[in-house]
Image 1: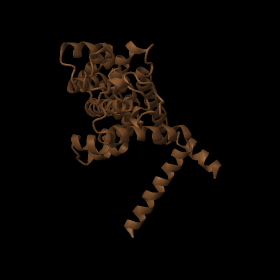
Image 2: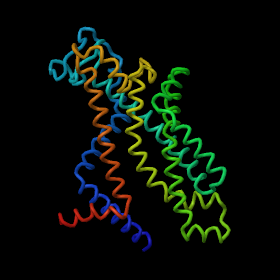
Image 3: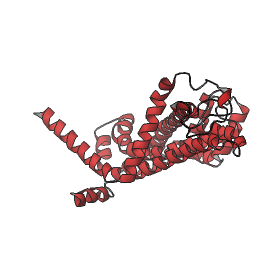
Length: 304
């Protein structure tokens, strides 16, 4: 009986979320597009086989939207005759992997430091916040360029420097949330019952801060992706033969008058992914906030 009740509760909750999701058409379009990009990042490279590195000098700078060749050349070819579709798929995997790794790492470390700073306060909390202030005092892109110029601009260093520059956002957000949550009655009750600080932080406080951090992470994903593209464009990001959207734009800028599509298509994808992430994060912020959730629910009631 309890299992049936739990299943009904789960399906009702899922139905309510889906109804709010379908009531926001822009969010629906954005998540469909983002799901397609994630699918390409996960399974695309296995579908194109060796098309990514296959060169055909006879097809150098092949114009897009041509039906004279197979589908892999529908978006044209680059200066070495490589398929633009294949290169865009590989760039999707690399760009999204770097951005996702940096966001998860910065959210995890920054969130934990913010929890500690907000709960304990005192000298420990002030020290953590001063570290965040020092990091934020430097322009993130300039700091990343300097670090990657001094060290090897490899995948690991790129992820670490992007995560490091984005940590203060999560530190400040988590600390602000904890300062409000720790004054609630259930935290006081846990303390009076002898619960340890670790249990209070990770069992009672952290779950309430995660929705806010996830919303910020969704929006921050677009910023990190743009940062990675900018670093690759400047030549201190991923190096050939690997490729990202930013690197494709950088390689295509020398052919803008001769082959505009080399820079146009990766730039278009960057813009669409960033726009979709912003629309989805706006929807997620409304859904996770009970004070604003009524907007989507009222739309559903009117449609019924």
